[in-house]
Image 1 (tube, helix red, strand yellow):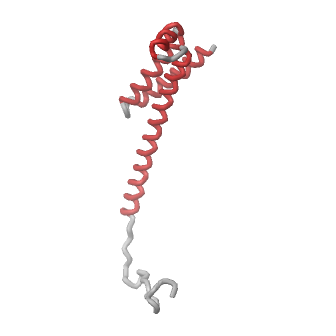
Image 2 (spheres, one colour; image 1 turned 30 degrees about the vertical axis):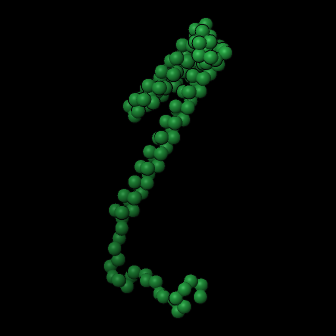
Image 3 (spheres, one colour; image 1 turned 135 degrees about the vertical axis):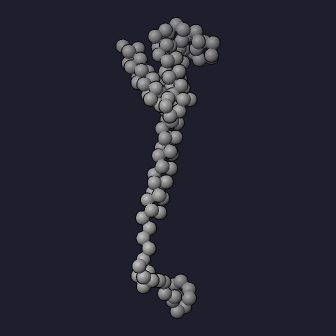
Length: 124
C-alpha cells in the first residue's frame, strides 16, 4: 500500500518539475530526477538496499527517505526564489505606479510649507 502512496507523491512531484521546467531547467530536472530515483527505489527495495550499503546508509528505506528529503529541499528552495522574485516585482510595480501618478499643485499657495519655530530646535 505504501508503494502506491509514495508513487502518487512521486508523480505529483514529477508533474511539478515539468511545470517548473519552463522557469528553471535545473530545478525541474532536479525534481524529476530525484523523484524518479526515489520511485525506482520504492519499487525495487533490493536495489535500494544494495545502493544504500555502497553509500554507507544502513537500509534502503533510509535511502528512499533521503531522496524525498532532497526533493523537498529543492522544492522549498524554488519557492523561496519565487517569493523573492514576486517581492521584487511588487516593489517595481509600486514604484512605477507612484512615479506615474505624481500630481503637481496648481499654485504655490496649495503647497504646505513648514514654519520655523522660534527656538530653532526640536522640543524647545
